[in-house]
Length: 164
Image 1 (cartoon, rainbow, N blue to C red):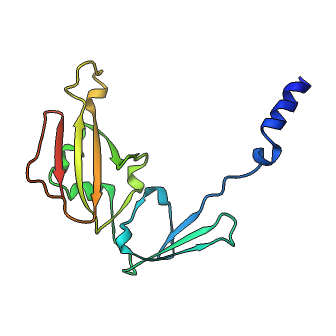
Image 2: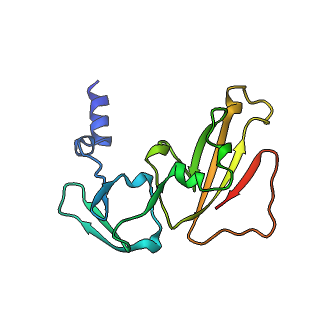
Image 3: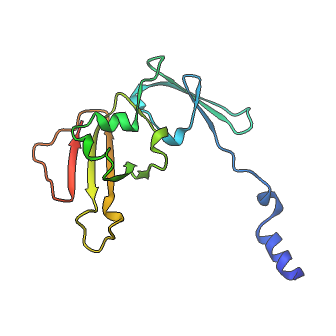
């Protein structure tokens, strides 16, 4: 038993066991935000300042416009062409922005200057999927600081592209 304890202490020093992983506190124009759910256009940032003197560190972002304009995820998607396919009782949407799965869609804030595209992947026609899973749709959102224009588009029975 003493050997096991000694090996654990050597491989996992007490300084690591009791240390905390510091996380920055983020502010946009002086307002604290959960940066995991913020999608701000880098072109809208005027300055960034890091304060190391605090316990975990703080990052202050100042936007070019003193009042940062953003949309909720729901409002951003509703500004797209075919949002009624996403917000209804017959489907359960799972949102992804870039490669990030959005765990809490209600807390997402997207810079109003972004243009977007949403691709909807439906599981309703996929063979081998249970009836409960057939209500799931995966909404992939691509953000861009310029309008997204396609000369030729492609759509299948499983996928619809919505462009803002």
